[in-house]
Image (cartoon, rainbow, N blue to C red; front, side, top):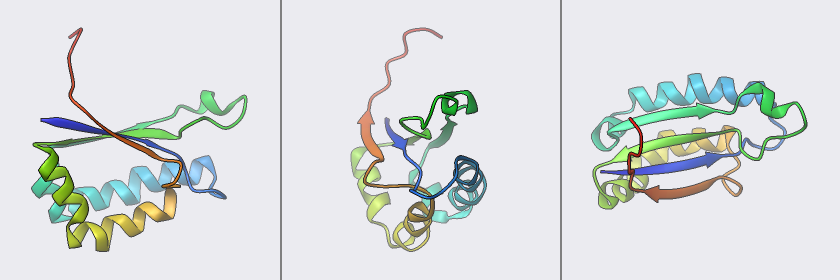
Length: 113
């Protein structure tokens, strides 16, 4: 199993509150209800940047998403699937600056329980 980590930067002009609300409600609901997500994604976790990180200015990222897939082939199939492209991708463009958002594939090695 592999984990895709996505460091998400919010879309310019969107407030911190608007971003976190959209990501945790609208986008999360799309992930839960879109069949292609259940087909390919084994686990999906959102990690939201805490408000204290914005006190001294803008945070480098507004959160991270952790998305588990069985294989690189499954990850690629998911992101190329017509259902992802029609439902999930357009929503991502509403809240995320994809040019500033970073994606990287990892293999988890547990060090502590």
